[in-house]
Length: 152
Image (cartoon, rainbow, N blue to C red; front, top):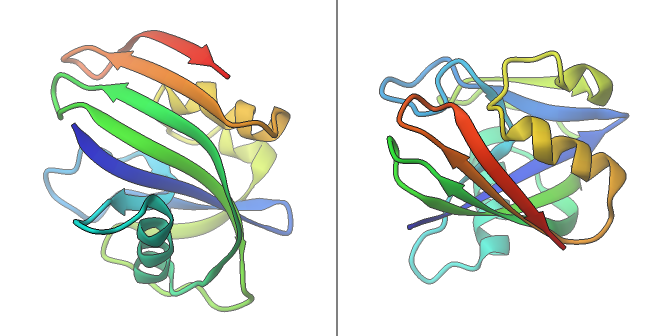
């Protein structure tokens, strides 16, 4: 199982979203997602998300909070355990990334973007809840969400 991190960086009522349109063979191709990546050997999830956020955006995170742990069952791509965070960032210009296109999107408008179906389950939880939750998202070979369960 892959270990990954994911963070939704907030500034002025917007989330920094990454539109994955630059990489070939990308499981997230065409989707809008938060910032994150794979945890490297010897790295904590917090060290990973701080590194990934800086590499992908040039921003330093502040107010980092663990919000959830998501178990993705992905037959096509391999199962993944993701540590989900929210944070704000020091003021600064977001730099370009080879991962896709970065945009600050007003939080109410995020739901109108092309998202993974499971994101439509956990993103509202980030707005409504302050506790840490555990979410299991089950996809089939066609990347369709076929089940989910939430525990807190």
